[in-house]
Structures are given as C-alpha cells and as structure tokens.
Length: 333
Image (cartoon, rainbow, N blue to C red; front, side, top):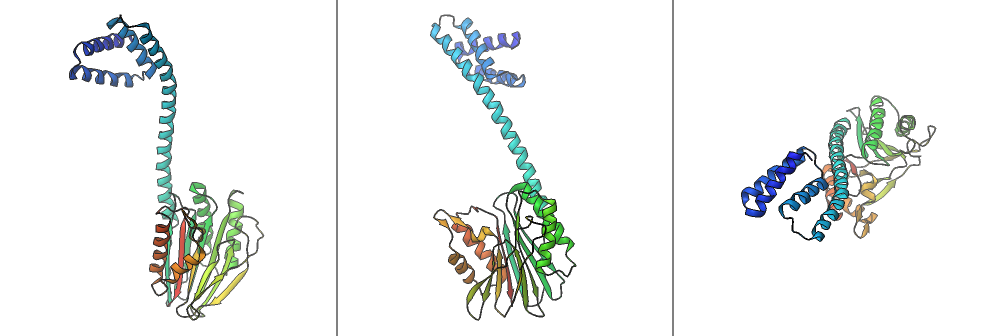
C-alpha cells in the first residue's frame, strides 16, 4: 500500500478513536472506496490497520497484535475464495444472458402454425422446464384436406438439445411439399440426425398425418411415447404404438406405419414424456390419472383440453415442471 495512504489511514483511525463521530465514519467510508479502486486486498487492509493501531495505541497487550496476524492469514484465504466466487458469479450471469438470447432465437426458429383443415380441431401446449426446451412440435399442411404433426423430444437439455432440434426443423422444412408418409418422414429425419448430431444425442419422434377426405390418421414412431386415440363411441382410450428406433441410432433404421379411421367426437393426444412421466412429491403420476384428466374435458375444444391437462399437471407438481411438457390434441369435429 502507498505510504501516503498508510499515513491517511492512521490519521482517520486516530480521529475516530478520539472523537467517534459520524464525520469520522464518513471519512473511513470514503477512504475504503479508494482502497477498492486501487485493488487493495483484505489482508493488506488489516496489516495497515495493525501498523496504524500500534502507533495510535502502543500500549495494547501482545496478544492483541497476535490476533491481527491470525486475521491476516484468514483474510488471505478469504480474499482468494471471494475472487473465485465473484468470477463464477460473473460467468454465470454471462451464461444466463446467453441462454436467454438462445431461448429467444429458439422460440423464433421453432415457431409453427396450426393448420386450418375443415372438420379438424387442433390445440397444443409446449412449455420448457428450463430456459431452453428439448421438445419440439411442428405442423405441416396442404391447407386443403391434409395436416401433419411431428412431436419430438431430445434426450438432453440446454443449448446442445436446441441445436439438435434445429436440425430436426431443417429436415421438416425440407419435407413441407413432399408426399412422404409418416414412415418416410421419419426415415428422412433419421438420416439427417444420424449425420449431423453427436453420437450421444438421440431423439424420439412421433409423426402423424390426418387425411380429412378419408378421415384417416396415419402414424409412425421413432421410439416415442405412444399417442392416445379416444373413441367416442366406446368412451375408451387406445394406444397408437408403432415400432421404430430412436432417431440418430442407425441411418438404415426402418419405421413401422399404422393407420386408424377417425369418427366424429374422436380425438388423438400426442405427448412427450414430460406428460406421461410427470412427478409429484409422492412419485410418478399414474397413467389412469392422465387419462382421467384428458377424458374429463373431452367435450371441450382441443386447445382448452391441452391447456387444462397442462394446468392440472403443473399444479400437481407444485408448479415446478420436472421435464419439458408438450401435448397436441387432434379432434374430429
């Protein structure tokens, strides 16, 4: 510490010990700002305090001076730990800003438009559990009599998952005008993911296509959660499952395709595991509970149905999602 600062500190200390006034405290506060500006460490401050105090109060017992030596050693460690902590906080703040920017870019990039097909009511909800989402919903349509929907889930979170989803969207964009059926769509996306994404990244995906003229829903799955078909005539749910490897595992993977005819009042619910594996403090939410939640609003519009299921599961989890939540409802009016 510069000699002139040592002398100034000794004068401030002497005045405070003699007067103990608010003015003396103010001088000390002002002096401390100068120490910060000159990057004076905590242990240096204690050392100069000890030296000044020896001149101001020379008659103090030796044990007092030993206590200052102890404090100096403590402050050396404290100062190092404090700088490391401040550095980590700064990095965390910078990372949070970057994540928020990336989240805004992701939201814009993955934005999709609900198709308008006569006789088909579509609703969906997708909510990330963190800043970045690992879920993806994408609609395609000829705006006449066909509508397709892809629901995907990356095994991972954060920016890597977001980048992976960008590749999936790139693939879906390239298929907008194609005549590929659900199994063909998954085959194309699988080859893109297998070539472009790290080996540790895998994607599950369900793709379905509704033909209004035939009232036919065709579907295929790449290791994704089975969709649910509600039959109004039977007042019962049925799983729409199809065999197929996760995207990115093998470039030659083949995907089984199925189809069902949709009647008035029927609907299909496509979801990610953030719905089927919702967790409460008591454990996982039972499948029957989820079916009851969906069934309790079966007469509502599709969007109200999706929002109701989300709000109830969110409430059951204490308004803290454990995983990304995505749910699509396709309902024949």
